[in-house]
Length: 160
Image (cartoon, rainbow, N blue to C red; front, side, top):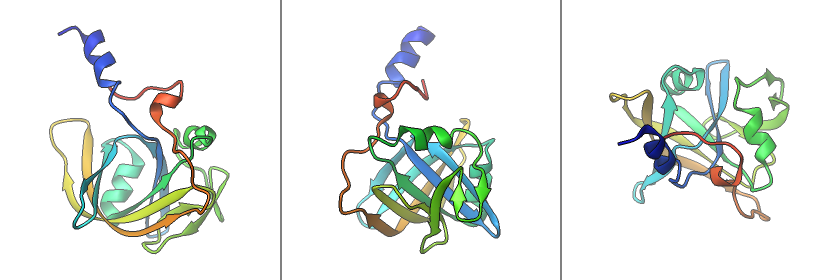
């Protein structure tokens, strides 16, 4: 199988763009992620794949919780701001205001939707990402929430 074809085909998978956040003690991490999906209705479970050699991976594993900030279609600049390690300052992450959620994960103030999870399973298989299964424990939805940001709507690609 040609590597170019494999990469092109795998990049056709639908992916949203989200800012994942976590906190363990006084340490906070945030990163843009795209490999995230719901895996169960009852109980409500989601799965996120995090690169093993990342700070967000280590803090999510240590803290046992994560927040997902769902980005609006017009919030590409927020996604881009979290491609590199988050700059943490009082009340802001990489210049964007946040508040602590129910699970104490940072929740970005200006996103159309968010949810928080407690990690219930971790699968560090053979690949370069670890799968974290999270039980959804809190959610929020802005009254004016519109379409969300998808990877295909940007000039970026991830995967393949």
